[in-house]
Length: 498
Image (tube, rainbow, N blue to C red):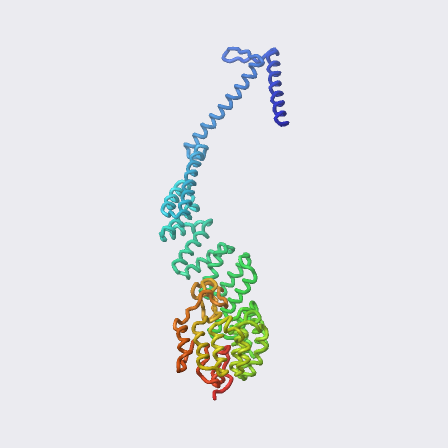
């Protein structure tokens, strides 16, 4: 309100000053005399002011006409002028409209219309760095790979779009299955943009598939520097790479270098079961059992695993069954309630013919976590304690339909592996294997459930061997003592056959 009042007062003051000035000019004497072509013109004070204002306007109009004439001459000469800029703005407007329509068509899945709009936008804009990308993506959507490849090659020729072109051809090669060429393109894209996360992931996966462990380490370090992976994950994957390199070196016969790589892998990630087992065997080969025990105990504390128990048994391969039960106490006392610990204790006591202790070690695993291994051990315990054949064979029949328990499962595609591998053999993902129970139920024998009543009622015992881990339930109790214990935590036979 106050500001409106101030503006009104200022306006009234300006009008008053103008009226005062006009009155002063009208009352004043004299004027301006102008002689033009022999004719003398006398202008009064007010007329002189008006004439001066008209003269200023005429001069301004003359300058504008002059500038228009100069601009017209420049336009005719081909130089950039206001007229050319006007037409350029119209072309840019039409070009950007076509580009916008092309992007909308691409998002809508209309590939042919997107390519048409891209061509129209290129005609008006003359900016291939914008329109070529739209053309390439539209061509990919339409299935015209040749057109897409040709357009991506055009993008490579421009410094500002080279990365986009390389990445586009790389993805095409991946879709075609040409991983060798795709890896070279991924390396080129990585050189152009080392911090690009998608390129890092693709390159790391391709290097792992090609078993290029040194190159994968460089890519992994780049991921750490760019912050796309936390340090603990990078450390674990470095251990996986070191373990993979150790496996390749040992396969080639250079065991010393392989042992060093295995020990390095275990140092980087002590809870990595294959690395711990390989490092322990390296120490055993070097006659350093204490270091092997320390490695295995640390890994067992993180993740009890049959491979660790097998490596622990290799420290003293000639000991008796009773000695082995006692020595394994240093390992099994770490996680006494873990299912793997209880299974190993049960296996050891079965070999030592201490069946009551084996039953106590197994506990309720045959009911609460009934897998093939636990049920087979239960059958061996029943046989060792003199149970009827129908009871023993009933446990074995249950084992036929029971799941196998924890296995190496890919967390990306749930594919089950027999042995650990750095790359999934199904989806080829890197470092995705975990020791766990598969999410999907395993296929079991359809006849196993029907065999149970036949076995329980049949007059003659029937021999059933469910898998490599199942003990021979039809042998006598003394045969359990004399049987090879390769299934028992991977341990060699400790007693001669009688």
